[in-house]
Image 1: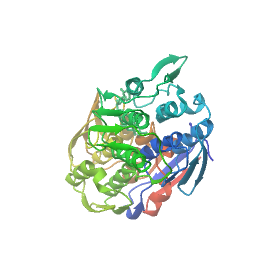
Image 2 (image 1 turned 90 degrees about the horizontal axis):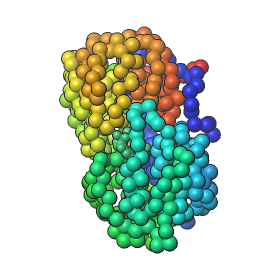
Image 3 (image 1 turned 60 degrees about the horizontal axis):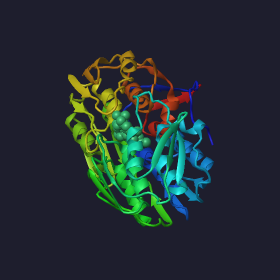
Image 4 (image 1 turned 30 degrees about the vertical axis):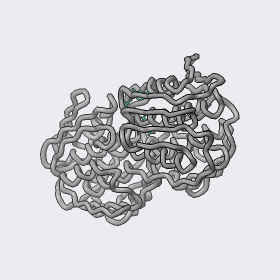
Length: 425
Ligand code: UD1
């Protein structure tokens, strides 16, 4: 097993201007797999996940769970989990590498009665506080304190009890924390202003199959009636809508024709409507999306929003498309305060972008030109890959270890569609 990537000298080289054609199969969703893996801390009598993507982030989560005492067999996208956590303290060395590690806090508390989790490190795309996760624990009856960089949570003899959680802000991770912590608490929990992302529905569906009583997922009010135990369950992780959206943009950008398989188009509704307005042709079936384009994209403005709005995780990739649009497009990022780090790098390829705080105006150019660029975070890396696919000449993309956090077999998938892409030192 490769270690979680930190900076290494691997680079991706892309010689652009090949149009992409063919079929690509989308992997399981990273953002659904991570909370589902954390569920192994509260289902102790056998739990199997299918369609788990092999990514640096999922490997890191598995290391974290193994360190806590869970046994795990991972083969061909299937993970069999067994056992229960043997300690309360999550490893600093692991947690600091991935913000989503905070997802173990609630399940560890439920399982052990107390939990000590390091504060996850800062993140390039913003400060990303954890106050809403703490609010969840307190609303459900946990005592929280902070001790030299750790969050320490504990519950009294009465155990956790249901409560009302009125989120002041929509948070995917905190909604997941609330569900995983309330599922075995006594009584009813009501979450208002809950996140509505498909990955939350996936988490709730899995828990319900294990015997939980959760309703309202997919809407902004979720009700959880606590149950006494969760049973053995087999569950297949939903497919990755962000990976699917990234391939859809790759097809549009390169005037290609790509069938994107193993994806639920309903989970990308807003994004696909926007892509269609830019001039791409889109055909959907129950579990596939065909995207083709024969024209320069029209400029369409977007504002990122919690689901069902335009996803922040596709903002950078969409900006690559707008960089060659036939006019000016406006993009407003409302979820994270520092999510335009791809802009100066895309400008090295010749894009014309003006940024003012959370807003960007992109004046489409006819052509991007291959350049040496540096990726700054996961989705920014994909933005640069997309820019390079349509640019003339060869681009050299540094910092690609970010890509390994969220895109499974990206080079193989792109070269099967006709891209000229290789990775080397
Ligand atoms: C998840 C996704 C990430 C996606 C994001 C928004 C995973 C593993 N990651 O991240 O890919 O970009 O949703 O769709 O699923 N916030 C607080 N306090 C908190 C928690 C969050 O203020 O305690 C803020 C954040 O700083 C951000 C906003 O709430 O401004 C939304 O963040 P959140 O939805 O929690 O993102 P994550 O769950 O970290």
